Image 1 (cartoon, rainbow, N blue to C red):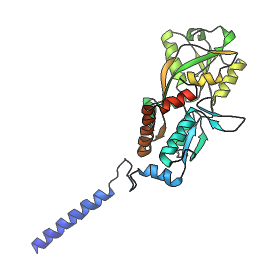
Image 2 (cartoon, helix red, strand yellow):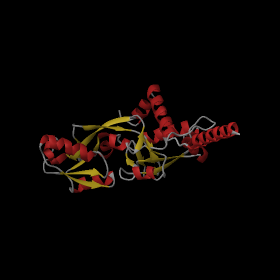
Image 3 (cartoon, one colour):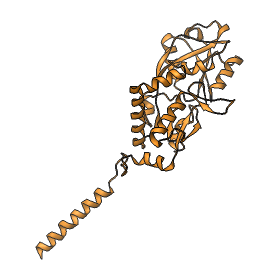
Image 4 (cartoon, rainbow, N blue to C red):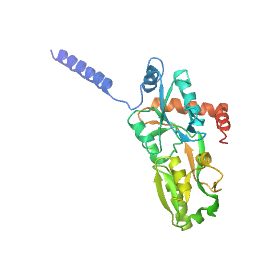
Length: 271
């Protein structure tokens, strides 16, 4: 009888270990039988890749008022990722985002990715997965030609317009502190609002990444030469979607190696 009890006890322990192993959780996405992760498979089953993009940044993501179509470098990149994930670049659903809304839209799952001049920072990497950079820029300053302002020093005591939740404010404030000058900031929801404020004289300067500013350059304005704090753009996804993040990163790096990414950049005059 004693041997039987020992045998039964051993069987119970083995069953407990099996149950524990089956119930354990792993933060990494599990692969499906097709070899793709569960998060990527969910997108494939849905049949459309949902991406947050800019619609007010010429050459990156801009809604043409004549055609009502959104076009730009980041839209082409979105199409390339849809082709990789779904086999068809047309299987995308784009949603307009701003610097303030792009994070929340990722958080609540309304979009799978954000490809919207989203600068990679150590702080942001704590909340989202970012791909390796697909474009590098720097914060710049746009002023009225007749202002006489030639550099950041010329903005001492002046007001600078920036986008809400953007990195521009921090970059310019740090540069101003080093120069020992005082500047103030006025935050806006969209880039067109900032340009309108500059034209109306409500602010003395429009500050954001240089490539974005070039989309708003006209005969009355000038972009100053200096650049502050390199801004590297990455494709962002939810922290839990590690399989998607890996596929996006691999695709972007493959496009870099093949030269396809450079061709896109040159196509939109961003080189």
